[in-house]
Length: 269
Image (cartoon, rainbow, N blue to C red; front, top):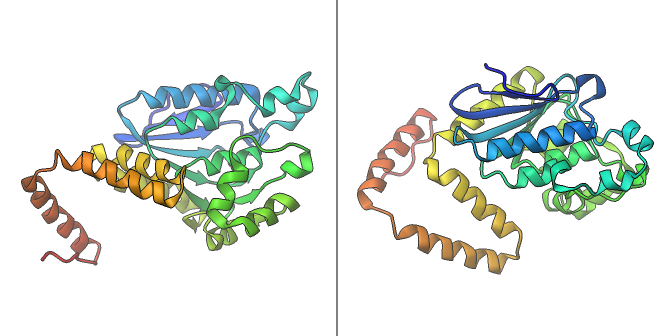
């Protein structure tokens, strides 16, 4: 792998089309200092215009994914509210939302409060069995501003979300998997290979589909079901204008071959 990063953020290129972004303050559990937040924003903005970053994997260096905002720095700040409600150049979750590329979170260790919000901003999560999740906003005395109060209930249901957010309790990777918070929990040594395999699988679909399909899902989730279904119909009709039967026939054979290789051949009638 090659390295292209500031000291606070590492960017690896394991193969064409994939970028692995790692928070790199391991001795501080990758706590989100102002400098790290700005470095993440710059990194995501650069990847947004990078044609060879069609899938992004986000992880943490060391034993933690992210311990949240740097509370030591926050406690010494003259205006701590500015960190809680940041400007655009200090808001990594906002910068992530501008990425057309799918973001796979490879959660290697604790993801706490702001770090939990950073994880929830990913499109899907793979967790190491060393991972844990906690929302300590209510214990710190701060309301979330990066989406946790809205994204978490949509993933695990309001009751479980309130259990986590109103207690500040931690849950482990296996419980997170059972609740639907993460796609799967894997042994630590399998975490990055699993995330990279998913990235490779995503890169094997039609290139123009990755961002378009992600955008369709996300846009639908921002509205109600009826409006989402209408949005899907509109975009499907617009997309269908450029479809050609010969292209679909060729792709059908490729799908059949892939199905046979995975042991579940699709219906080819």
